[in-house]
Image (cartoon, rainbow, N blue to C red):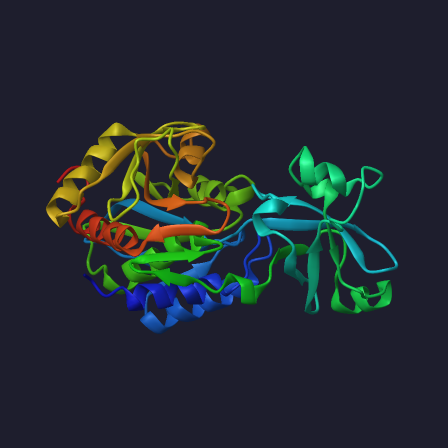
Length: 351
């Protein structure tokens, strides 16, 4: 059994840095520091993407590997004198996933804590909360965040309409279940951990390689669209979670998943074939799938005509967009595949 302690530690560090879509400064500071310590060329663009460039032997062509650094959560819609915040979804979030408990509100000047609340249970049908007990799931319109701060105190922290709300940091701390990691926001902090490993290990690739920690993916792949609009690429590979469900022929465990299609369209079968060759050379078995209710930097960039060839390589994950569970071996195997791929990719797109 492999020791995944270092990989677990890296993912844990990333998870514990908040990064709700559009307010990603906490994770940005960490990533820029980590990449700079590695001595690799890195910068942040106007869309908020953090980019590493590893120069290739032939710079006429380039490939990119993306992993989005933003996470889902909620956004403040309004607040009252009693410090009660009305919030709405940010990305594909649901309040019942988080349950009642501590939420962190990221103000412009300070982060404060509140309690995501659904109301009392000891009620009759005269109270609106009764419906959530018996008939319908809790929606954001039925939930609120209690801060017990007055409007002056909220203003002092910079809390306002538009402020982001995420699950409390102490509730995010990952746990290990044998060779599995369980945590909020493995989507997509575990993929960012893959980028960090690649940045440390890729040396003299055949063509230029861009490693992109993309911004605002959960709200429309905004960062990836900006990057691909401004950087010509011969291939784009998105790193992602891959949902485990009875409707998909995907098994939990160490085997990564390569997608052929998702909600936004088909992936490039030629690029998928190249990744399968790299996987075989790395000694890694790969699962293939077509899934729905899903999109990635690559499929969205292909849909808008920004890249001609896109692929999505992921790791099987339970409870996606919730308290997620993934095998550390599947995450590590994505690293192995991409190291082989980057070392063998030639200008004609073939080995």
